[in-house]
Image (cartoon, rainbow, N blue to C red):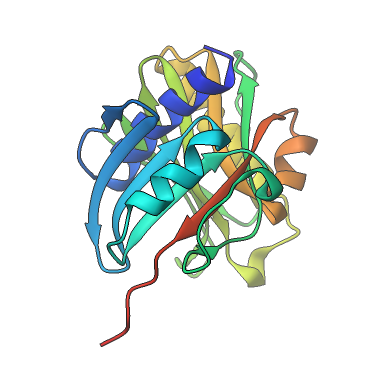
Length: 210
């Protein structure tokens, strides 16, 4: 499952588990996720940029999101859609590696049920310094919500969280990991041996604030 369509399928199902939304619904051009949250009511994920324009023109409800495999110049959407900055579908093989301790003076804990697991890194005062999540979907590890708090950046915590998530995924039987990265996150993941499978273009129909 290393082709773009296969990675997207794994990512969609893992993202749904990670975010606690309903099972993705397969559609002719991709997947629909009923997110049901303010500003993010429903999400469509498309593996083919050629399908974006027709799908976008058929969608009119505010709070609708599109995630499309393809660079911005290949993704045509009407002018009333707000297009976000580039994102990247990335993947990496998994393998058993020696366990890694959290950098001093931090401590790490795992919270989860074996399907969705959080790595939480705490500072000496108990506050959260960094977090990350992995969801296992169909034998693939989907990494999500990796964050290092600003005051704790550049201390190796991002690398540690990713390594710990790898350990969790391997223990669960996953052989490959997948994620969608921001421009900022891409640099970290490339340094850790991840590869870019596809650029992702995100667009949405904004909801008016009340």
